[in-house]
Structures are given as structure tokens and as C-alpha cells.
Figure 1: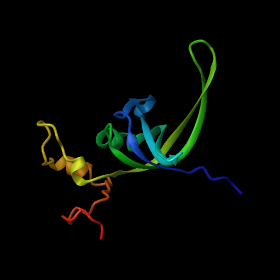
Figure 2: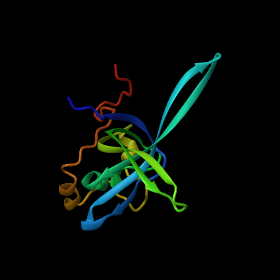
Figure 3: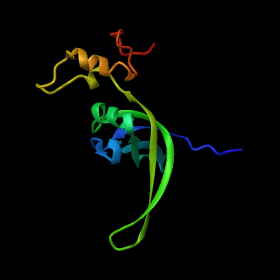
Length: 150
């Protein structure tokens, strides 16, 4: 029987995705993701934040670079990958990353509307065609003006 390597995270981006291009124009995006949990310790509420490095490849990297930004809330599914490298002093270091297989934007619809004056709410026909395969899910029903789910 083979093993299972599955990671599910919901957190906020620590900074905008950094995108770079490897040989054959393969795109790779990476960003830090913060997940937090709260608990009571000696009657006081304590928040503990864990930082994760998320890596996305190819088309998913391009979509992430376009839609994700620092502070956005995102749901990530992927797998753990640990790699080793030598630093400048020749010391072997290890890095554990989340290789994302898909992601879903979370939040209100207004969180994803353009805010800069240069951005417009209308897309050109080419942008509409380009984005037809991009799935962006919101946690709020965009047709419902009442923010309560019941």
C-alpha cells in the first residue's frame, strides 16, 4: 500500500507571490502563508501563528501571480516536499515546502474587485476568454445581500 501525502491549509498570504521562470519558460510562484490557532493557557487566550512556504508550478503559478496578494485569505491543497541544499558556508540545510495542487480564494466578493484607479471593472474580450477556465470561489453568495448564512 502506498502512503498519503496531503496538506490542507487555510491562511493569509504573508507577501505577494514571487514568480520566476525556469528553463523552457516553466513558471514557479512562491509565498509565505500564515495559519493561526487560538487556545486558552492558564485562563488567557493565546494565538499561535505558524508560517508555511507554498510553491505553485506552471499554470497554477500564473493564476496565483494574477489573483493572490499579501493579506488575502486562501484555501490551499497540496503535498509536503522536503529538499536539501548547501548554503554559502557549505552547510547542508533543509527546507520543507507545501507544493500546492489547487487553491481557492476565500472572502467577500469585494475583496477581489480592482482597487487601483488604473484597474477597471470591465474586462476586454481577450481577458474574458483567457479567464474562462479560472475558477475563483467565494465564501459569500454573491446574489445574497444578507451576510448571514442562515
